[in-house]
Image 1 (tube, rainbow, N blue to C red):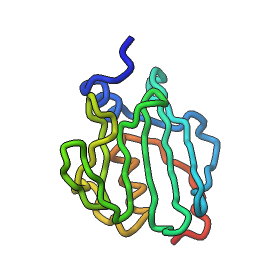
Image 2 (image 1 turned 180 degrees about the vertical axis):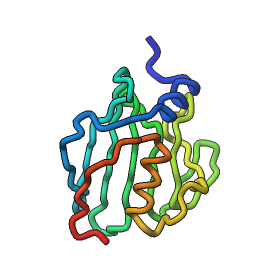
Image 3 (image 1 turned 60 degrees about the vertical axis):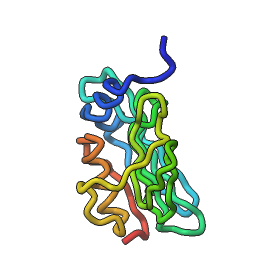
Image 4 (image 1 turned 60 degrees about the horizontal axis):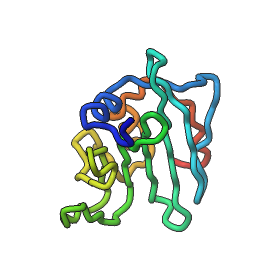
Length: 148
């Protein structure tokens, strides 16, 4: 059994429609330094995923949204901050940026934000766009508390 996904497997998992495992739960957007993990399943019930949301302590605009396939493999991770990332080939990608699974490298490659992300300065708009980008079709019930 391989310890990593092929690129085709990763691309298929990312494109697969996903929904909440338990649609009756309302989740709370993490507070400063917090993390949220939402279990997801494919609409056919065969695959399991996790949606992770992380929020940094000091710089509250630093948020990270991530979808893991088979609960382990990072398929997509959006880093909403201005910190650049250096790819394995030495290329530096400014922030905000998105990491996508790449066979042989996992989530170590970052790319400029695709056009699907129109408002990287608006955390909640970008979060909603990330859900669409990752084919999460279910409406997530997330209490954003004091977030605008």
